[in-house]
Length: 312
Image (cartoon, rainbow, N blue to C red; front, side, top):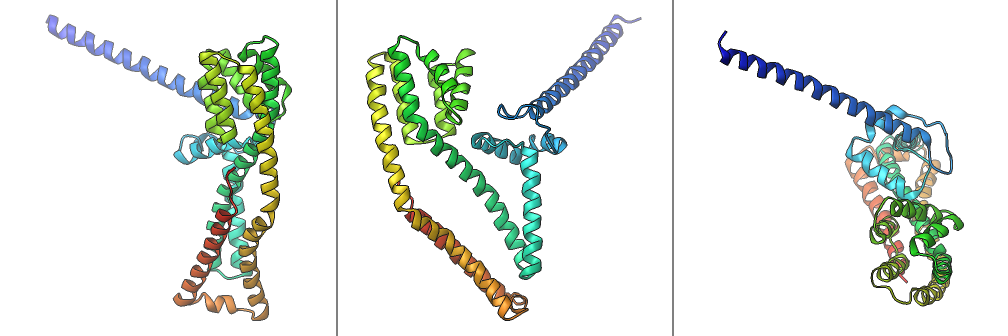
């Protein structure tokens, strides 16, 4: 037989063998990845180990999409004990319920509007949880700085002091510092580990603390004196934030009262004149008027919230 033919057959056979091996390796990798995701989602959060997770199939498919990744990032920051699939299913069920209730009690036109408001409310809920967790973490910063100052004054390294603070402080500071300690244990630098917290829970106080620790780790210096001075400053800022929040509580209630008054007026009109909302939304002019009114209520809510937001 011609040697060229033998060489061609041998190369073809080798290519087929490599293709089969590559497909087997690819399938094994996908199976291992799916098993790892299922094991991680089934294990639960540290505060609720072994909790049975629901909607695993939805969670696995949703995590591969851009929407699922965005929801996962927000859930990771909020600290909620929910998977992406669970939150998505609960959100869809809530939006569908709000849609049906609005269509039944008001008018069919208000169903899609209520659904959009429900989607906005779900995103606002995640943002509120993140802000709430950030505020709780900021309130723990004076205690964190005090623990780090005492530990470093006793001669402990900064990495050891961070691990000690993670054990002594409650959530969310304890959980976040535990992540930092784990990253430091596998070889990450202090700047990288602390910088991740500043990105997850952004605040001016945390940025100042992280900058102080990073600069002290780089260039050395009187870290104890810096941390003690920072502790006093954080305590003062904590009291100032509390006073401002108390003084602006009435404005905050007013911001949420504005859309409630609008919804109450719709219910009042429908109770006084049954079927008035159906007739009003039965024409293009009425629908446009309702949308303009809803837009004005939304603008009023946003403006009041902006006016009541004071950065300290």
